[in-house]
Length: 162
Image 1 (cartoon, rainbow, N blue to C red):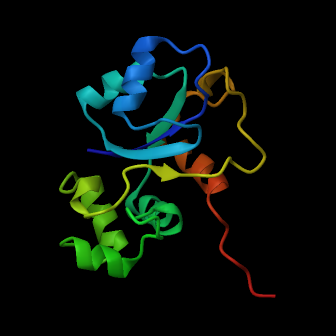
Image 2 (cartoon, one colour; image 1 turned 90 degrees about the horizontal axis):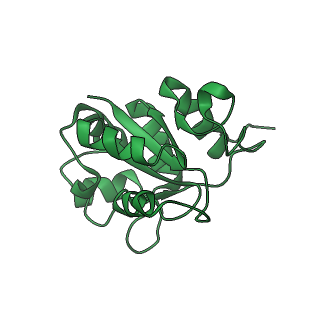
């Protein structure tokens, strides 16, 4: 089983009603919101329904942990920390939680109070095209392992010493 990151790329104008319902079920209500999902037949069908509005691909546990560490939020609107994960779940750190997510042993809801949606900023240098599929040089649809390159452009770069 693989861990998928799904990011909404397009807004709410001119979207089919079935796609709107599917994005509501995926909790992708705004542009640049990201959710972590397990790869399954159900998930695959839902992603095919919304492929013209989102992009998705596999990310490893290190990538998921980095994203949760930088942009994960708790119910109170505070930043997710290793201490919070240790106190509110059976996992000792964000990385151990991300590894369990990838193996399918955990769900995002296993950490009490963790918001299921990660709100990301737009990618540096923008999206390639919000109307073309990834294979045609755009941003939509399945990216595979290339998903991490997009997420890396959306996350903060580590600060360098001057």
